[in-house]
Length: 366
Ligand SMILES: CC(=O)N[C@H]1[C@@H](OP(=O)(O)OP(=O)(O)OC[C@H]2O[C@@H](n3ccc(=O)[nH]c3=O)[C@H](O)[C@@H]2O)O[C@H](CO)[C@@H](O)[C@@H]1O
Image 1 (tube, rainbow, N blue to C red):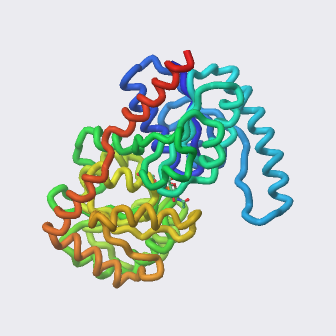
Image 2: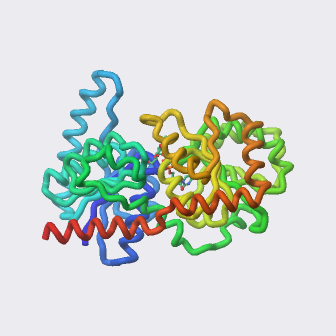
Image 3: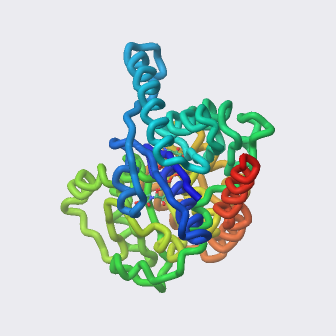
């Protein structure tokens, strides 16, 4: 089988695509892949690092107001569809899958025009702009939250969950904490603000660290690559006890997550899929800067099931952070109950479900 996958911009669109590729490789090691992304997106680093053939096209997002930039965007879109068609004709895929982000708009649209079977995968509880556009042209729309179903053409929707969920669950458990000089017999909290880091969470952590230094639990604090130097400057002179480790980015998230007791972070859809697949309790600070406030909706699905605590960005201070973190980290019973609720919401076989949809589609076309 030959498959083109396209998705990019942020980790939330890239890691589900990589997880699907991994599951397909396990099923049939002869499967051939081409990943199409952009030079600027995180995918241009992450995909080649995972040894997957990678090609780029140029594309940019629409501005919300009418502007000359949008004229340029349309020109770029038409050009990128043309480039994508060339790549598709040369590679001859059996199917093309988009996992969101502008780049997948051009690639999946081009494939649909060439009558190749197409699927988009929607990770969020609110339809992304690209997937909404593509849903009119593709064969199937795979979703990860039931609540998003009515935002797409009804007949095309199929619930699969997010393939990254299956990847983190199937990862062999190793003691990934020792790599960070952390012990594996003390509860550990992982703090990260999505794939790019979150300034507000980072600031609250910096304020909270003198207090967190004294706690009987440990913390792996991931700032995001672009924020790391600034945070280390801000921490200049603040003593870090050995229970707190600060890192810019983690490349081994699937290994690490099964060693974690609580996650504090944003409410990006792929993070939520990981959290629920592993049955982890979480403290979520949704980003208010995303389309239609979709991270709050993502987060509320967990909060309403007592699987997560919510802190809004407005409420987030160092003091508030310590208060909520203590509630979970100092209380085994609360963690256990939330963990059970979280696990009930997970879809640990999401990649297999998506593969079935792909295989059916290919069979029907043949
Ligand atoms: C600001 C923005 O537009 N955010 C969107 C973006 O978030 P973002 O890209 O932050 O996506 P998610 O939180 O969904 O996923 C982050 C992914 O990065 C991984 N990771 C993170 C940090 C790290 O050091 N190492 C690492 O591997 C996580 O394990 C996870 O797999 O895509 C998501 C999925 O469409 C959306 O729900 C978010 O609203």
